[in-house]
Image (cartoon, rainbow, N blue to C red; front, side):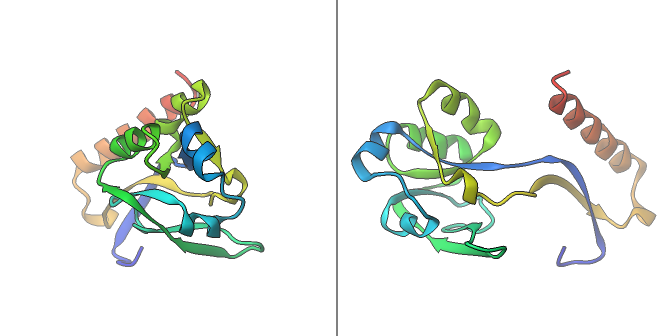
Amino acid sequence: LENSSLIARRLAPFSVRLCASPELIAKHGAPTRPQDLANLPCIVDTNGRSLANWRFKGEGEESISVAVSGPIEVNSPIVARAAALSGLGFAMLPDFIAAPDVASGKLVTALDDRILAGTGIFAVYPHRRYLPAKVRVFVDFLVQWFKTRDTGA
């Protein structure tokens, strides 16, 4: 965290997938390396941390950033999913949003081996020393809620 007075507690893992419709891939081809996305239509979700600079695993241990652009910018992963389903471009979608459409074949993933891992959903709050009880209880609730979703309970 940039502000060291804050505490971040990991609630759950979080992963993304690079997705597109089969029709878009048939028309433009699938990227074989992240840099290919610079020349392909992409759907930019402005909620993303890196906006139109998508990060991937490089050839070695380093990560690389690819500047992407496309016909549409959105501010919702749900809208990005709809745009990808409509064939407007490649979209970086949260796994839990993309999974049903990937399973049904409505969306196809690309560059799976180049997607960065280790991200998560975090609760961020002020230092514990002055943390109100209701905030502590709410964060504990969220930790348990996400655990039950991971185990399928």
